[in-house]
Length: 124
Image (cartoon, rainbow, N blue to C red; front, side, top):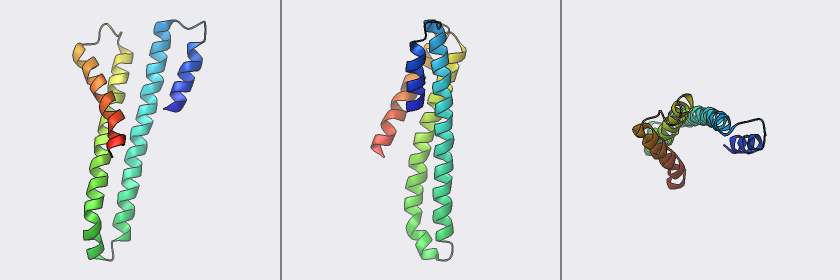
């Protein structure tokens, strides 16, 4: 995320870019970074779950103890990943269309996904 903000800020000072072109490039970069964050979250959750499963495979009591921890990790990761995925899809939809052609529902869904994605890590 920080990399996309830095690149966006640097490209903002390029006199050859128009404002609309800059906005499209920035949203495309932001959508790509969000897709990478979604993939990273899914992979990390899978690896955590696999590690817990493998480390408790010999002891059924230990697996029962870690079951609640695993459920909490998967549910919180699912909420965060789904909100990031929704934000990425909405960013790319807004990027492919002109901002004035996008419906109000899409723009509202984008703002909703952005707010959920920014609040979720704080709550977890």
